[in-house]
Length: 442
Image (cartoon, rainbow, N blue to C red; front, side, top):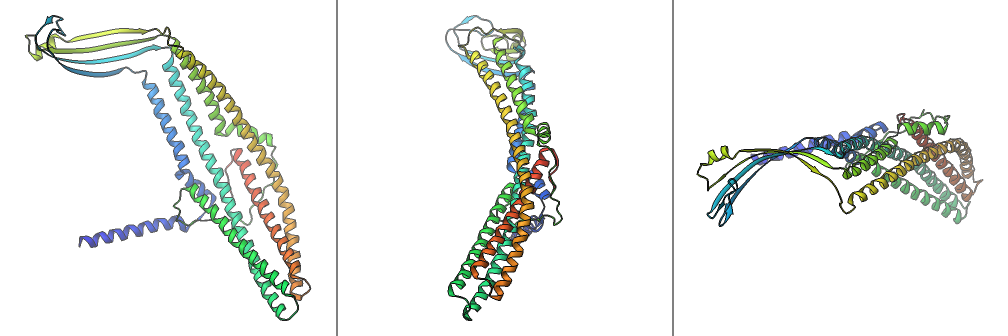
């Protein structure tokens, strides 16, 4: 009976798992679905979030360094031979059993402003981690946008390849009939067969490309490799917006909103704090120390409890540590900090250059894609009319197989050029919107 219930539970768990999997795989994913899911599950973003949590911990640790410490200690000694009683300081020659207990505390009053600078630096690093997390999210958003459009591009590419394959198979059938009727040579028939095989190969290649992009998307989403996923096509009425914004305007907006800029600025400020911390090692350190203690020794006539009362002591004092020479270690740390400031400033400039490169590249590609879209659409329409006319001529026997193949390939190339221009236009327009702080919408 017990085994029966175990089997029922296993079957129920498999059913629930299957239901959950079907909920993920049965729906058609929109771009917004992909973005929301990735922002919650992507491991790169999770890693950046953990870095932020660690920065919070480090900031709290730095603030706690202002507090006094407190620790207790207890020791038990056995001494034989000539020794000094730890409480009376008398010389004795007998065996001594002694116990010492104490509470100790210290508080740093001054340490070359290092504590305050360390706290301020950790606060800067905490703020930087927030921007780095946002930068990680932005990178994933852009990757998903690119991958999403690549999938749509590949999906339409499959449709083109399949249509060509169907058309070429019909042409093979026609060529076979004409060959049997003696109206064409064998070479025309084999050329039709060759074109059909080429188009079939193109279908296989297109499907493989599509699956590769699907795999990449599932990795971005952190989905199980065995799960199937299907994404939503673009709206047929999607408006391919014309670009009317100046690239300088976009660049200035990007500098004001992209988290990489703020992260690089805070890196410079944190490096400057690191220099102040390093210079603080030249200054003295002043600490307040205190302790409470008591103990017991076997050579005393009083009992254990009485001795703890008699030997109870309190101590408070100031400790001053003045650095004089530490083999130029502080000097080297200061020089390293100065170098790191310059490196952080260079990194900040490189970040600005990289953003400008991204904006200008996207802008120029958007302009080019718009012009290519117009030209490729006209070319596609003309090639389609030419191919349709060629098919009719071929059916009437007024066109050779070679000329028909040429027309089909011309039409295929025109379709592919149009697809590429269409999706590049969408991609770069959305990137420019994103660089201005606008939402990505398809």
